[in-house]
Length: 281
Ligand code: AMP
Image 1 (cartoon, rainbow, N blue to C red):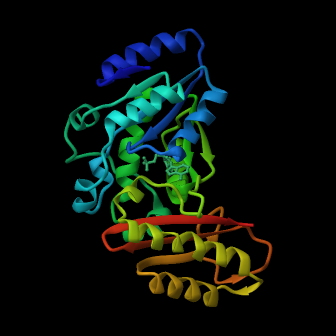
Image 2: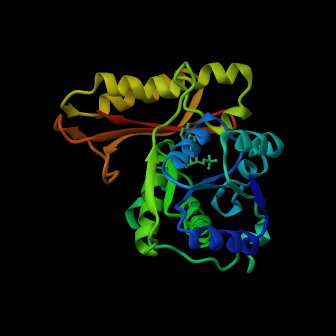
Image 3: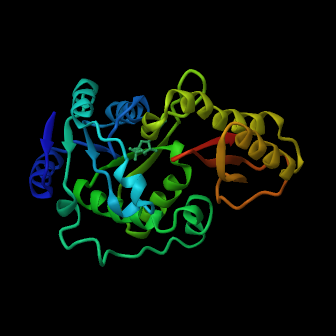
């Protein structure tokens, strides 16, 4: 694995690779890696001659400064995992390398409705930050294929929109959510949970599974209320539990029994905010 810390060095190497006709797969991350990240790398390795992974904790996508400060950093372990996973190139930039002109006047992206709901509503500015970092990374890496996790369902939609808006040639791949054996979605933020919180955390995937199992045509509100109560009973403070059309994220209040849905939840266990989602069917 070759490690690059500057955009210029990365760019020079990638030009050489691309001129040889090698297809490039790209997996952007914020580090504190787990099996979920490694599954994206495996998907990229299967379909590309070279796989690039980036680790960058992007300050512009954190609406809560405390969340940014406490974001887990395990860089030595990450490098070891990436080496073992067979990643070809690791891009590990600094903030000034990513934003040479500072973060004060970065572009604003027309995200429309997507920015007003769910994560967009509860984390104002978050998806602008996601677009700022992804725009820069996609310009630098010029990947043929981009692999991101369905765990961040709305983020996948935002990045798809960005790719279209900026006319990148990169193909987007949404990969399934990897879970712990009890169902908890793998997440770097899980590392911040105490042993007791870790036990409680599984309630978020149980709440979504219950919605998935119990849903029937008609009003969705009783299911959502029950899920929210279940999370509160298990020590969560809920931002949202929602049932939305899988393609648009428009809320679905009365289900026709046919439309593909996604159930999504975001909730705090003390200071740690967890998100999860499940597709229905
Ligand atoms: P992050 O480091 O949290 O920004 O995540 C980097 C990428 O890994 C994003 O595309 C995430 O959606 C994806 N990811 C995070 N958790 C999981 C998971 N449990 N399963 C699959 N992909 C994941």
